[in-house]
Image 1 (cartoon, rainbow, N blue to C red):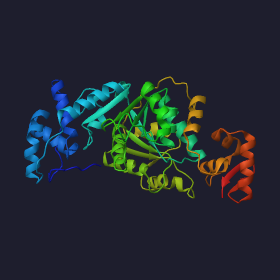
Image 2 (image 1 turned 90 degrees about the horizontal axis):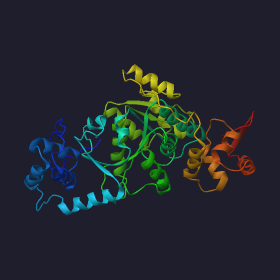
Image 3 (image 1 turned 180 degrees about the vertical axis):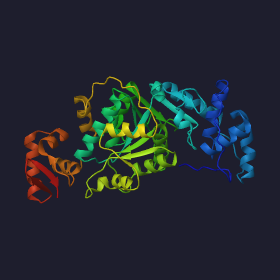
Image 4 (image 1 turned 90 degrees about the vertical axis):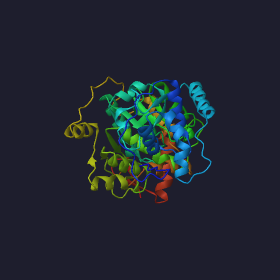
Length: 392
């Protein structure tokens, strides 16, 4: 979680939800306040709680800075904030302020809720129940199918699927839930898609779903920005579901943030010898709910007293639609080594049917068969009875 006591506050910011901005001048002032140097969510909330309005908080900032030993301090200039508003207008984005009626209610309750969110797409999705689905960027064949099936089935059950637009499980989840409702939270500015291969996916989500970011336009994400994005992913959702995750991964950071925020954490079990499932298995060992499918998720939420949403008709089932499956295959990074490298990236210790592997790869059967023969000769894969293969 973010702990930004930039001006030396010794205690956390009080539990405080700013009232709706009275006018456009106050909305501009709130944007200037959060964009001011050394002002993060905690400082923003404390200043708003003490002064009531952002305009008064901006006037008080230089004195706050002097008390903290920061000389020659000036808040964010008005032209900078106006330029951000113009960039948002060009991008067709809407500003959601903490305290606005459209601001997601669950996210507003976390200790470091983002004071400003930029939104492009269907903001009505923010009023529906949400579940976060996260996982590894290098999903196995089984993990790929589980991510698609979970996202599709949960979407058909009426949930909005939230994820971080990363490679692998994130992209698969967005694709499978594109028709039923998905929200992508970005680590950089709303106009800077990372990774770049998900640019088309981000455009599709902005038309059919919703894309969110707390960052200013034009900001390219850096390593420190991804945990900030992850807290939003967790904060939006009733529960965080981890499909595949290594023992040290960003997905586990999201899971820990979810626990800190009082959210439920669920995980799909994996083969104990597959490092891609190490983190998921650790979560289950430490108390996360074991998930085998959407039915387990809905049952677990019911046990917690959280009502399931009304199911919505959806043209998806356990398998991804053809368009989504093709896009997922295109979005998946192919490791060096051609077909052989792509096969090794999908395989783990758990045997996978060869025909399923061909479908997941989207390659001609003859090419896959040749690559499997090369890998078998090299001792990299093991064939089992019934046409199954696994990584040695």
